[in-house]
Picture 1 (tube, rainbow, N blue to C red):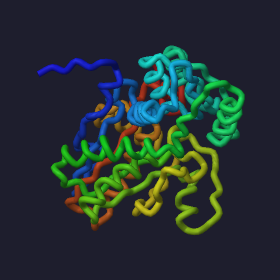
Picture 2 (tube, helix red, strand yellow; picture 1 turned 180 degrees about the vertical axis):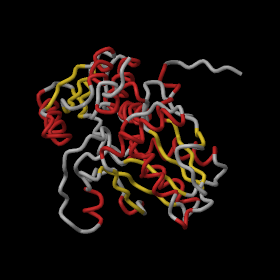
Picture 3 (cartoon, rainbow, N blue to C red; picture 1 turned 30 degrees about the horizontal axis):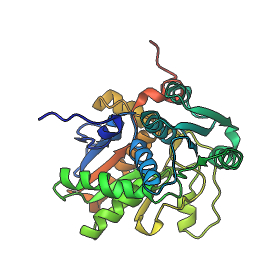
Length: 316
């Protein structure tokens, strides 16, 4: 039976799980959740809708409200398409280091984009967004790094999909940490049903803020190439108490594993997906995980990274 949706936001979620047979030969079963199958191509579509819907329900948004948000790209795209579908103006701040494809998609969706210095990273984009918010009449900031609707979206949808599609047999989640909403929401929902379930966070080796924080050290963020994860601080929505392990992945490993995913599995994915795949490979190789079911989140497809280091060596 076919379904007809009221608007494009109704098509978010229900993304497929695909068994990885070639890229990770392992006695564990590794399943990739293809979040690029969302309508605007990333896992962030889930929270874009969730945060706007929660604000509408709370009466925080009116027809003339300006939606302001700092973003590394994909959350901005998610907010932009939800705003386009619902008639809101969207203004986004973003580090200038983010790919040109993301900026063009945002422009196509009618969003206003303010670029911030690359060397200031996401903290710079956040500060600029706060200034814009203060100076703009009738503005609302979803605040993806703090908004409880972010992990709630993953508790309500992503976790339920993983649980249903694996018949409750999932043992381990491997997920990159940007805002921390995915790993927090999924871990909260599944650990409640299956206490032995483990959540593995992935972060850039060049900016190991989670590792440092868990070790009780002063976080020392660094520059890295893995767009979408490694914000340089511990987001408020991230529950570190739910994280069982942190795997650090090098920039070049992330690039190579994303390329390998395309060549060996036919999965055309982005840089953070490459990082997640490398981490899943590491986790699957641990002896204690033999026979386990591992789900790895692949946050986005590769088209938004064609101008980046990921595909610089390709010739058309």
